[in-house]
Length: 145
Image (cartoon, rainbow, N blue to C red; front, top):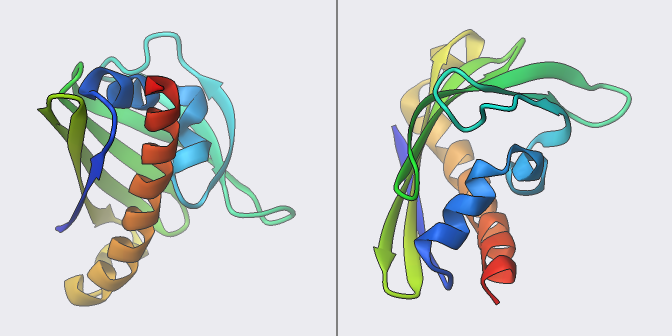
């Protein structure tokens, strides 16, 4: 499992508000290019975001499902990006007054991506997820100000 973290200059409720707004998903998730639909129940377990990955004209329509949610504290997702496969993503918020440390963990769980050796997965996932947390910070800090 690959884990990265970032301190965000916003309270946990502002950070979670971004995570709970499925329409912002393509703004902070690296590789997601557009949102087609967010189910009304999102971020309740079982709810999905219907998104596309890639760039035009090579877009792939897929979904991300909520596995577990503790509002203001944790969000666990099953991310689909076929033909690469599926991945587990966990986001944990650690509030510290007006700032929040966010830990993001990810691993491939099925498909061809799961066959890639873990150290090789870690190289690409760490860089990608650092950028995702940077984008998440911009959105959360903007909401908090």
